[in-house]
Amino acid sequence: MIIELLTGEHRNIEKLLAVLERELEVFDSGGRPDYEVVRAIISYFEVYPEQFHHPQEDLVFAKLNVRDPAAAAKIGNLAGEHEKGARRLRMVAEAVDAVLADREMLRETVDAIIRDFIEQERRHMSMEDRYFFPAAVNALTSQDWTDIAAAVTRNKDPLFSEFNEQRFDVVRAHIFQLEQEAEAERKG
Image 1 (cartoon, rainbow, N blue to C red):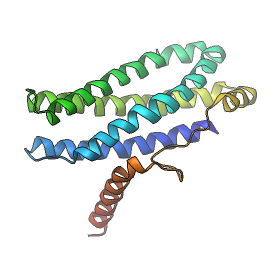
Image 2: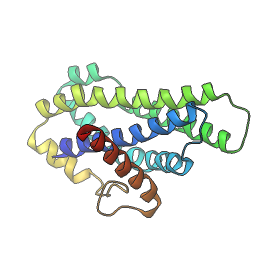
Image 3: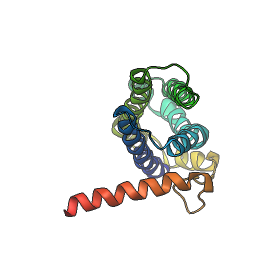
């Protein structure tokens, strides 16, 4: 079912946000984050969520709006939320580009832009997981899900699928390292 796919993608996105947060901590402490990782994460967000994940959610939301307008109204303007996220992502990309080009920008400003992106993405996914997806599961018919499945683009996630793209190898390696460190901490 598409909801399982979307919630799985949220878990994957959370992994990326955790990596971005870790790199931000390095930046905040005066160090040099791994900008290859940061840029790859930005690139991933520009590609997969914007071009595939959000349009799939928008299909589900459109059906929800027909089946249960009151539930859809409580969720609000999902497409608008996605657009705000895209604007925040562009601001993150511009801030990182400014740092790499040695343009004048306060560390606090860069931190605020990236931290806002991370926090707003987490808030948005939490809302979808807690309210939007359950409302859709409750309201949509089997024919609605069939229609959505027929309309969904079958592109594979370039980072978290067996058809991963080479440009994300550095991010995959970083995520694997963080997961190993977390596992060692739990055992230690």
